[in-house]
Figure 1 (tube, helix red, strand yellow):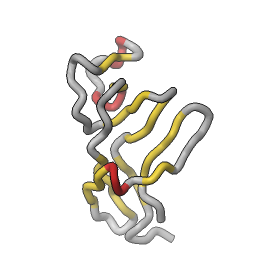
Figure 2 (tube, helix red, strand yellow):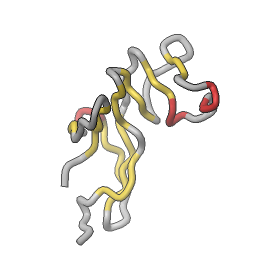
Figure 3 (cartoon, one colour):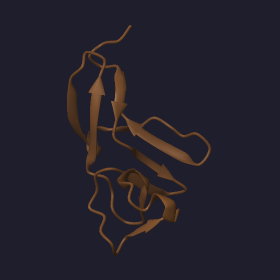
Figure 4 (cartoon, helix red, strand yellow):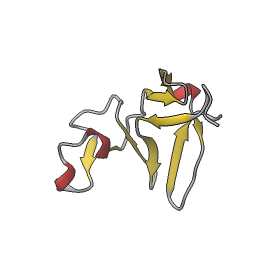
Length: 89
């Protein structure tokens, strides 16, 4: 059963091999690198070496979307060398 706490979708917020990947961060051209040039125009595929994410837009089971700052997200991974952040139900 979906509730107002069930996460349906959210912006990317995770670490892969120790580097952040996110849609919203303070990254700029001096602290970002692209893992694969084919994804150069995709903000979701940017990995940052130094910039922590600001947070994520999260859509819940009742249809509402909230901005959740990184300080309110919890690590819900890992799987192999990927660590995921989200809210908990």
